[in-house]
Length: 505
Image (cartoon, rainbow, N blue to C red; front, side, top):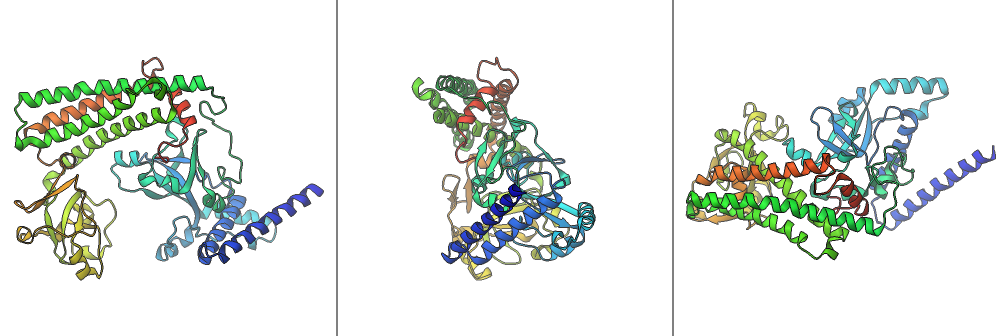
């Protein structure tokens, strides 16, 4: 068959060209030989896996999946196949790359169709597919997890079918390191490196993306006047939502005056209220711009992002305040307090704490004498740089320490401030020589249920009121097209013309 021969010849020719291209890059020292060899190896392994075990590997890089039990969502940035018989060996010799495949496919030892079939059947039975995922930062906040990246078994995941939930938002803009953009059909487009390593995955650049399950507007042409009308509706809707939030701030301010808590001892309450009011004014500012600017997609998107981030901030404030308030009685050291490590002797400042550690600490060297360390409170410590140099031989910017290994450093008033490798944010922390502590901002104090005086009850009521208004408005947008603000169709049309909301954030 001439067509088949030509096709095989083209495939071989393309493979040779890729090989030559990478050889050229090697010679230019743009990448290390080892790194290139590893990528080439992983590429061939992923191709072999797709050819031999395609029915077993359910998900593709760029696809949005959800954890069955914990319900958080994430985007696939890599996968591998592990043999049950080699898992223990793999755990003893962990590789540095989460996406490095650890299972040796047996295609090269298959002598005929019968052997291949038997091998495939055994691999399906004995193999486990694992996926490297970037977690949605909002889901991670709601689930109270500090993980940004997770390695999960395929059996614990399901595909996200709802198109409204297929766009996720990563910590520290990690998504832009792996993907070029978000496609409105509901997936992230892998960048060139990811497409090279996983060329047979559905959304990689060398494979035409599937057209199944296209979301709204995926095949519809958009006229300028239609986009202008949509931008205007969304901008006006965002402004309307912001206008509904301001009265809640005003009520809180009136309650403050009524209760006479605006004295120096209760400045913390007003400081946080003013910060929230400033956020709302920023949202309203975009809506007050001339009509011509409100019909520009980027301007509308900016105001929408501000509203969205404000919504996240309100939810995070209430959630963290509740969680830390419930565990406050177990906490021995307060925010900003100078402490000393009992074993290693370095000093540091408490900048945050967790009721229990966010990771398994059972095998940590410094916790051998601590019983049930995974049930103890842990502190985020900014250590003194000079102490770290003496103790560890070099500076450290952060330490994560069990409460059992800390004690108060009583000499802090005599010695003054701690010297850090990188200074604390001056907007969030300030040194108080009288108390010998670093005083946190009022927002941080609220999150960790520190005392806010008589204004705390009013503060909680204010933030809960803001959340209720936001939730009502956003629920109306999703479920009622005639809500008087804007519709989900408006949002998807806006997203179609603005593939990135601030670098995929």
